[in-house]
Image 1: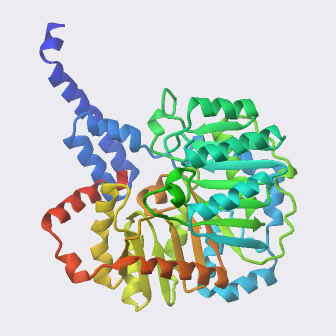
Image 2: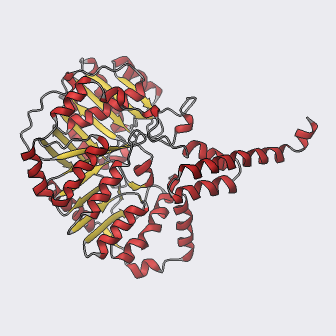
Image 3: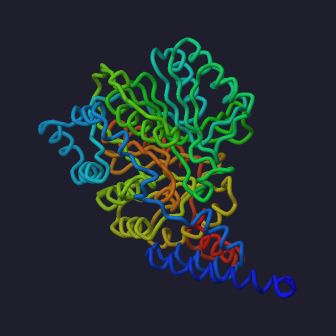
Length: 482
């Protein structure tokens, strides 16, 4: 005991490095992204104890793991039947192929990776801020007849959150089935509000709770999705969480975000996606009936696919879809993202597109809501500018929209940022819309944002202070952990 007391620090350091070296070997054998590998190795070897804690909390890889199995839902007869009904015939596929040209490669890509079917009969409404979204959403909730399903990264019981949650309590007491999935890290709901929800009959589960839970070591994997399904016919997806931050009427800082409201067949894949998360979060026996997939009666024809990615998918589906869209662009690529911390594939694809004389523009925030993310984002911009990509910093407030429009025929709106976390770690969902009218509307919104943005000049940016570049380099090293 005297020996241990006299040499406790040396023993702990030795134990730390034994565990650290074991972790380094594990990381090397996993053949991860080299930047991420280097970041973890440096952290483990340079920062005793802290490096181990960070690796334990954020460094575990669970893609394709059984804990995220989707089979309980996808193998059910009702879901299989819905998947079969969404199958298109050859004339419908030919029509979409003629519209998209090379962009039609996205359709089999997502089907082969995710069994995500292209849906045709949809009406899609573009939503440009939280004020408009909540106006539409509250009305849809009031008119719900059978069920309301919500899956959100952030729900707070602040002013707008309390208003929405109390309305959900009222609807549950009216006999409407209300199910909510909240991310345990992103959301903040008081115990009092949780009791009100439970007493009203609302079912709510936290996604991978991190406190005193067997999943504490997996807090890195967060449910970043924002999904609402009402009566199986109306769906919402996009970047707008449920918080006062997203309501400009109650916010000192203007928040620019994008969401869409879907009416039609495209809601069915969202419903299936919600049930896969519900199955995992609730750990309840789940029997899905046809009442959750009613006839929608939509006559509009806006083709779309729902792309989902996360540790429960075999591939980085959203990243791959974005990559294919960029590499097959013919005239223009317009991207808006709050966090631009991409992998080498996306950087190279954008550089090649710009050097091939395509019109490539990217909007990022001038002032981010995270200084580390802001410096990390800025560290990538010189590579784009050097290749001829036009980069703009949004100055009116904070731009949180996650959108891309290509050649005025394809657009995507969803939850995925152009960063490593969205591509490989978080549970994300995007709607891919194959429609000229929608793409033109999304382009018009992009051009409006350009009016509230400042273009970065390459020569001036290249000559920014060395201390700034150094901070950016450090932030970039941490980028895979952000």
